[in-house]
Figure (cartoon, protein in one colour):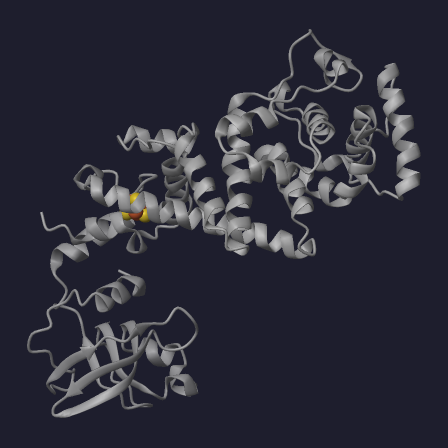
Length: 422
Ligand code: SF4
């Protein structure tokens, strides 16, 4: 039992509304539960009740126990002067500091609601509702996919807009920074992002005809060219960087921002930076090109990049490896589409009121296969199979933002399960 559950019960009128009385024995009718207030102040605003023959309009406060009103010091707070009803689970104390009619819900809430909610709250499963999930209809899943996929996209669009603001509405710079963050994946995303912020895209654009200079700029700014190298190419990069650093007054980020431990060599930051340099080398005005793409195939063609020859034998500077292709793989490109391209194209369409772009971004998500990661695996074990990336994004959002935070009352699946009377 918690207050959120009582809010849910009150908001949806899930208690016995017949012959209600206040704790003083006066007849009570709920005419309007009011509007749920998520900010400071009373829990429900502008409710309407009838006590005896008198109609009262005002705010409604909800607590587990009556004594909580004074415990929370509401009687000293002006915001609570207009409370017309105190709804509590248990009336344990008469409030003497402020005369407010009280409704006690104990005994009025159907037992199955209490039981189902308690089961969800006490569950130690990573998805609390897993024992009941088979009872959820396909239609409810469709609604949930749509809601959670849009919520996830909305959060990503908010991030795009924040970065755009920091970049004085420069879309190319914003895209470059977001893409850099994505190139670093989860482990080195922040380091890549800091690096991109320290190295404006206009500086890279000035050197865009030399792949080697681009590598020097990126590796140098990453703090990776301050060592003593024996390899001629690494020394050349070092010298180039020293020259460019002086020319553009650059300050590298600390090398210790980067993590290499327990990482597959394909994801080593120096190789990722070299791949990123190739992307910059091959495509100026990248965002404009992305906006013009009409299919996933076009997008994949843009991002199918291979770093310079040196990297065929290296995963990092000065350390020879067997010869292997270091092309950016399909799965990585799909990850860029889902996490960088779709949000920025959607945000661009949203801010410029170009619905075609928004629809195009959504259709890309629907065309891509569902992602493969530990969260999606946990859903698949429960036989919830996302049909595409739109649905896998929804499941990631649901798990991270709702299941892990035990916000089952705000989830359509949870509401269905709480209401099940079996
Ligand atoms: S948030 Fe929804 S899907 Fe997640 S555990 Fe709760 S009820 Fe289940």
